Structures are given as C-alpha cells and as structure tokens.
Image (tube, rainbow, N blue to C red):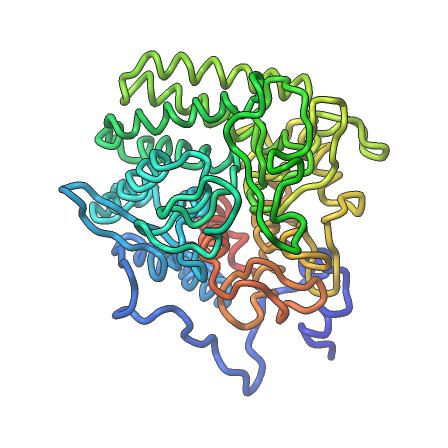
Length: 473
C-alpha cells in the first residue's frame, strides 16, 4: 500500500493533499510528542487561551488539534515580556528567534487573542501594553520597522541611515505603521477600553500621518534614505538610498516590503490598500474614543486620496489574466506582477478588509497569484503556495497557505490548505517561515511566532464558522 508520505512525494500537492483522509498513527509510530514550552518556562499564561485550546482540540482531528495547541499560544508562551511601567502596562514582543520587536509582527502575533480579552483581564492588560509599546516605538522613529527592548546594540547599527540605540532595524515599510492602527481598532472593538487613546497615542498617530504624507513624495524625496553593505541585493536600496524613481500620484512610497525586502517600484499596492483601510479606521477612532476631530479629518482625507490613487494607478493589464492589481507600480506606467507571502499581500486583501472575497478584480488577481504566471508561486511534491525573494527559489511560505484558506470561498480549497499545513510541519509541531517545495524537512526559522499564531488564527476562525472542516484533517 502507498503510504501517506510516498503519496505526498509523488502527487500534485494541493489536489493530492485535499484528497487525503484523516491521518492515523501507524503500528509502532510514536504519538505526537510534547513540544510546547513547559508551563514553568512560559512567558505568559492565559486561562482563557488554555480553555479555548481544549475546546478546539475536542472538535478537531488529533494531529490538527495537537498542532493548534502548540502554535496558537506560541506568542504568549515564548515571545512576550509583560510588565508595568509607571502604572501603565508595557509589553515587548519579540518575533521568536530574533530578539527584537517588529511593529508588524507584534501586531499580528497578538491579533487572534483580542476576542478573549473580555474573559481574561490580565490578557487584556497585556494587549493594551503591546499598543502602548508600539506608540512609544513610533514616537522614537516612525520610519523604523523593528526595535530593541530599550537602548542597545543592533547588528545593523552600521546601516547608512539615521540609526538610534533603540532601533534594531530602520527599513521604511508602509505596513509597519498600518498594523498598530489595526491593532488599536481591533482592541477597542473587542474591549471598548478607551484608556489607550491618550496624548501619546494621538501624537504617534499624528506622526503616522506626517510620515505617510512625506512618503507620497509630492515635495521631494523626503527625509528617509537607507543603504546597507551587503551582497544581498534586496537588502539595500538603489538610487543612493532613496530607491528607484517614481512619479508622485497620491500613493505612498514604501522602501521595503513586509518581507523586509526592498521594493523594485516604490508604490507597493498591497501596502497602499492596507494604508487606505487603516486610515479609515484611524478616522473612526479619532472621531470616537480619541476625541480628536482634526486628526479624524486628516486621516479620512488621506485615506480617500490613497483609495482614489489606487483606483487610478494600482491596476495593470497582464498578458494572460487581463486587468488585475499590480504588485508594485512607479507612477510612470511601469508595473511588477508577483506577490509576496507576508501580510499585507495581494492575496490577503479580503482578510485586511480592502475588498470582498468575491470582488471580480480580486478574483482575477487571485487566479494570477495562484498560477505559474506568478514568478513566486511554487508547486512541488510536498507543497504549493506563494514564496518570495526573501527565502529564495523553490520555497513555499506556509503563511501563504493560511492566507489562501482565510480568503477562500471553497471548502475543498480550505481543506486542502489545512491538510498541506498539517503534512509539512516536518514533525516539529510548529509552522515555519519557508519550506522547500519537495521536502518540508528543509525549512527556515524553527521559531517564528507570527507563522504559528497565524495558523492558530485560521483554525480558530474555522472552529467558529465551519467546525466540520477541522474533523477530517
């Protein structure tokens, strides 16, 4: 009889995995090992999270439940440093195997816990502490993407940019300033706690608007530039540190992508979609709990301008797939067709609230993204999905499988993504950054908390909306 492993190695990945039934242990096979951090070594424990894990596991297949139990709490188990500073919560969140806090990753890592804040006051305070720490980071430097836990040393301290002791890295990425808005908006929706909207928060939001305006580059290149001594082309910027030329059109220039790779054309479309959504959310918060009408007016106006610029300049005609959202444009009429696995991505637009999952333009774009015409779509014997230059050729990012499932309208497609995720954790019990398309034992980043929590978010979403999909994996 053909074994599960042999089948995965010889069949077309998604169709093959989707056709598989529930996994069962073979004779002599060791049951799922304990790989979660021991209780006494966990950074933070939430009773609400633990109860939810048991609830989901009770209605899931054994391996899927085991994987969820490892991944969903991984951020709390291993990456948070929660304390009180001057009577206010302060939470520093590392990415995992990099001891630094990214504005993007820290937001995404704690996002799935928001719905539990009402059941666990301590968890609610930890989440408020993440927002307060992000506010402090933005006030230090709105152009930085990653921060140290206080002044310290960074391996990137010699980068040719305006480094400070508090910075781990200073790559300008539009989405870095969108994620804290999204987290603030989600936190308030879940808790109705307006205490975070103080003067420091309003100042940070004002800096976000100022930075976005500067990076529309209507009045010159702006203050940000970046260069790094490196053999890795996507780790530094051309054009003397300002990037390739653009023609201002209302879009916001992003020097780097969410993968931390340099953009080719500075107007990164997925991040501009994210900015348009985030600015509308900021306007809601400023008009409501933050009580700052001026901030609300400015955020609303900028969001509308970016939305209109996306409509005018964000699409292009692909020779096979017709008019779709471009990945990057430059305002001169040039466009790059691809996608990257990190969020925001073009695949993730419905997840971020930028469009509906059945939007015709999105569906046309999605068909391109999940096709061989996307140069960073990869299909092998073990897995298929979107990768990106960050991890190189022949690699698939499991995060793209999660995004594909979260934005899918097909139960069969969701089931296939779930089975592929379960089949490619390489026996480690966690989700990795990138895996080789033919051999998931070849992977990057054994401790990448965002990927773990994002997988947990998918399972939790299905548990609440389509629980039957979790039983046959």
